[in-house]
Amino acid sequence: MRYQKLLFGSLALTLSASALGHGLINEPASRNWICGAVTKPDQAEPGSICAEAFEGDFNGGYQFMSVLTHSLGRKGVSPLPDNVCGFDSSTWDGGPTPWDKPLDWPTHSVSAGPLTISWDIAWGPHFDDTEEFVYYITREDFEYQVGEPLRWSDFEEEPFCDLTGYDDTNPGATPNIIPRRDLVWFDTVCELPERSGRHVIYGEWGRNYFTFERFHGCIDVEYDGGDNGGGISAPVANVSASPSDSLFIGAGTITLSAAASQGDNLSYAWSVDASDSSLYALSSTSGSQTTLTLDEPSSQDDVVVRVQVSNSAGNSTASFAFTHAPEGGDTNWVNLGALTDEARELDSGDQVQLRLVTTGGSDIYLPDTPFEVSEGSADAWTLSFAQAFNAEADDVAIGVLNSDGDVEPAASATANRIYALAPSAYSGAFLQVESDSDNGNGSGGSDDLSCEYVISSDWGAGFVADIVVTNNSGQTVNGWSASWSYGGNTEITNGWNADISGSNPYSATPLDWNASIPAGESVSFGFQGTGSAGNPQVDCE
Image 1: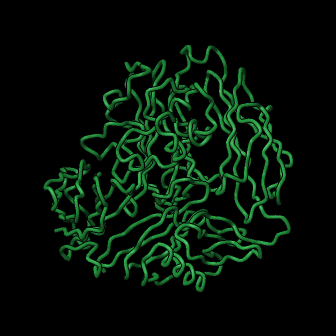
Image 2: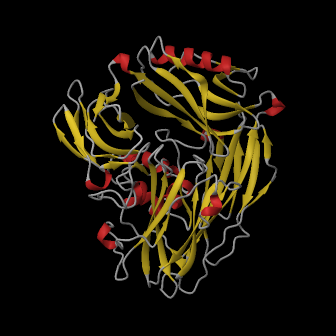
Image 3: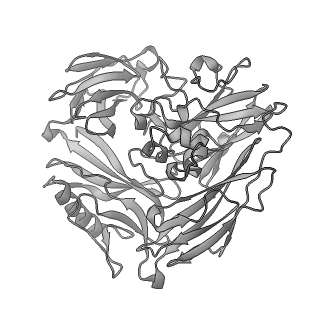
């Protein structure tokens, strides 16, 4: 079947649903961990670094886990993007993220030698298709200048830590990549080179060719012996809760304290992550103690309260996680998020499935046979798909939770949510739509090659898309091309990972590094445009 794949949906504990997985560096804390995961835009104190970071892009600050591209990253992209820390992230339409701003970011005290860098992937726990982690550091003569954006010339050309070839079926083969399933993150062990003073580490988490997702981030560090710490030891965060039960039922309060954290001259930043953040309020976001007030939930949800403890030598994060359930146990449902975050019109003949991500990071697709849309209005197809899905699924349901604790599909573009039976075997869910070529959409080409058009971001007046070129033959293909066109006044404004030419129709040819495609593998290139993202047929040869 020739098809165009559109991906949108929801994920537990996230506010963005445009990507298949999410993750960021939590230890030592990256910029988007400090300002984003811990300090949300509505919690940033006026005049603070986080307030400065979010200025001009308040909503973007909530997408801290979505600094991603569909590319081969620093080692494979040429020319390199304008923005270092966000790598011209797809979520920001190729522009700068809040974490690309040249601010006086907090630093972590480090020393040359072994360094463990951890990635929290709880927002999309994909262990099975992780491939590599890569880290670069600024040059020895680098001098950080507030107000001066980072440039690639500030960094060494070669990574100081290049961890490749991870295979989740045999994790011991790459001992410096350690899957921490208990914490839902990866530890990576690197040898930090000699430096003095202030420097920046740029890192990437790369998933394999099934997704081509790559997540990016920057860590600001101060080598021991510099004056940043002033002889103060780096803090160690500690959080306690009362009550400390892993299950909290109904409305009430939880008292949390970080007073047992280690370090001098500490400051504190508290935050809450939940599928429905409106149910939770903190009495203080900056004290050593805080009280979390919880409203009565309609369904079960997993909640994480984090505290970031900081001083001039660095920062440290600790968290308290619990399950929040309704009073009386009338429902056994866990809220995984909205089926769709915005109204989406589909075409008759489009095929729809839900991709469920298990807590172990594997994918399950339901229904087994994709649901075929007959009526594509936003209210109609969501109702009919939810009804068909619920008739087949055993431990997941789509709809609106009623007062009796039942999930009922609704004729609504955005009201339907995805619920899993507790204890949930899933960490998140995504809607996947395939548009059949009978609608004039999709991909075409030779028997050896196929092309797939993937919309990674669409905001109405513009979009970001990728085209994935797959070698279906049994031998390496050397050289390829792709061509497509749009209706209306859609125009491509810039692109990456290919030479893109023309003016509707458009064509693309490879760069030197991605001209060859091994048997059974793929390469991708992307572009940004104005107007409608459309559903173009892509031909490749």
